Figure (tube, rainbow, N blue to C red):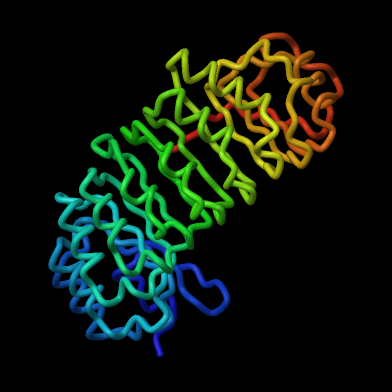
Length: 309
């Protein structure tokens, strides 16, 4: 049986969790490298596999059609010259039927049809799509019953223009985490989110980085709604929230609030903590004014720029 260290020629990182392996294949690994890996190593303990585009479509197919990945239930694809072909190879492979986590970079609208009709999607608990400016719509998938198994949905840094069908869909009731950071949706998407009757289990929400004034106003309206009362973590980086009246916020279970890239002075930090007594962590940038000698321990000053790519 292979040990994690045996994968060093093929993998840049191997982590072990609950006796299962999380493996990141090396950038530059090609088809021959993939075939050599499958020929010489026991890969039955690999649960999560991150695949670079250098393997090509043939290398990806070789991985996905191998019957030696007995534990594989999570895959991430990044850097393929033709991401649509990579998505097709993924959806067409028998191994896809076991996947519970899929992470993709650089896809187009073509994935919408595959998600809406893919049989394995009925098992999918976590979907992440990042850095995909050509992705503008997932309406077929958002409006389908196939999202019922989803618990974690991340659509970051994409051209996504609409998400109302997701929030109107009764099958979305299982969602616990939702991120739509750096997307291009309009204010109606935010309003539909705020008024949705289905997102009763939503615990984590990220709507960071939107510059459209109408969307920013809709986000302020959302902060006044009682419809998302189960939220525990809220991330609104770069949403121009300076001067917002936090006393109107009605999220009784909110424990973590990330407001980096908003202008938040020390007095406002204090106001936020007073208005939201459930808060355990408030993350902000350094204020323009001097910090007091003693700062509430719930306040975390973090000047690193958040990345939601």
